[in-house]
Amino acid sequence: MARIAIGGFQHETNTFAPSKADYAAFEAGGGWPGVQYGEPLFAAVEGANIPAAGAIQALRALGHSLVGTAWAAASPSAHVTADAFERIAGEMIRRLKSALPVEGVYLDLHGAMVVESYDDGEGELLRRVRDAVGPRVPVVASLDLHANVTRAMFDLADGLVAYRTYPHVDMAETGARAARLLDQILRTGRRPAAGFHQLDYLTGIPSQCSFVEPCKGIYRELGRLEEKTGAVLSFTPGFPMADFGDCGMAVFGYGSPEAVERLREIVSDAEKDFAMELHDAPDAVRRAKIRGEAGKPVVLADTQDNPGAGGNGDTTGLLRTLIQQDATDAVLGMLIDAPSARRAHEVGQGNSCVFELGGLSRIPGDAPLSGEFTVERLGDGRFTCTGPMFKGFRMTLGPMALLRSRAAPGVRVVLASRKCQAADQEMFRHVGVEPRAKRIVALKSSVHFRADFEPIAREVLVVKSPGPALADPAEFKWTKLRKGVRLRPLGPVHA
Ligand SMILES: [Zn+2]
Image (cartoon, rainbow, N blue to C red; front, side):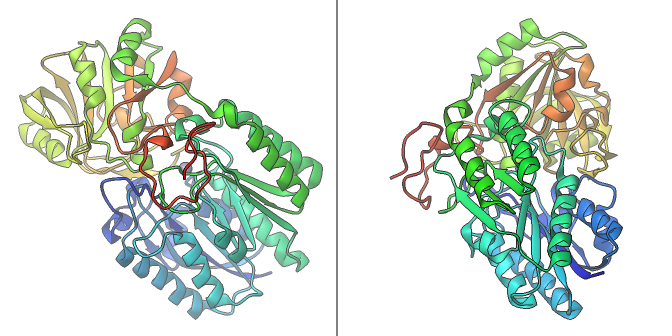
């Protein structure tokens, strides 16, 4: 049995977002465990829906012995700072070298990391890992479904295996799949024939959900192709907010280049089906007021301020509309505003005062929302998630609070101090709100919320309010993207 080095470095970079990911962001983790070095990384990820956790469990079950190097993740944001990258990658490589000889490497990567100093963050990391272990030691990585996969990443790794669900309920499972591919390469001593293609159009992330077409059908076909051919296949719709040459969709796989080519055709043919319906905030709230009821709320996705896509979760457009329209039994979460959460704790439960909520990132078209609110509940931000995607994640979101608008008493807002996407009902229960009992639930999320909230929702409306995670990639000012890419399905060509 083999000695295998384990590492991970997860970041999804929206180069248009307001804040960068510095080393402190990786210490905080943004809902994931904070940065880990050496053996403690095993305990930090254990039992959670995290790729490394699934890979570690699978590799141990296959009888391999594992050595921990470094594992780190931070909330999606603008670029990873050069300092954070060098500290984490540097420590990973130092520990990898001191662990040599190893017979294999597994890495838990996102695939859409842009560093201040490197457009292709994972390509650079894989280059350093490859330099450390040499050409013969197999290196296999799991990737997020939102990876922007580059030729360099594909060439430097012996295997890349991506999630196939969005919401990502299969993160740990994907780690296990990557582990089995690594094990197969080690057992046979052969690298299976590989194929890689990038596609020439971008799609907004709300249309990438694997619960609905076209992704639902694409992943079903991917599964059939795997069954028929024995290949290991991936389709990454990409993260269309990273301004660099290789941004966008890709298909790749191992064991049957023909199956990879067939998958490329399927994704290419699905272009028109990736078009999506977006609502402006006034229309969405009007509709939700009519259709929502306790037990079956209408869920509004405030997609463009999604902390899972580089938003800071602090824009106020949708909250403002809920108040203006005097919605009843409505709650918005989580508004990430540490100063206001701290102020709520000072003011105390049951008391009211004027708050200046959100607007901290100064996003064009957004401003703080000023108004009198009552502090209904306080929380310390420590709880464990229970939904299908974040199950087992131990949150440390700092001071939290539930505020109720005095101007529109049917509107409540959940404040948190540290950035995290609203994709788990426990984020509301922590401050005493049962989402199912509301008529309108507004969420700072694009798609991940669907795993835990769609089962309780009468319907879901994707809302376009101010934020840095634009739902239509054609609205970004691209400067580095390769020429010839259509900026949305059947949309304008980047020239
Ligand atoms: Zn993702």
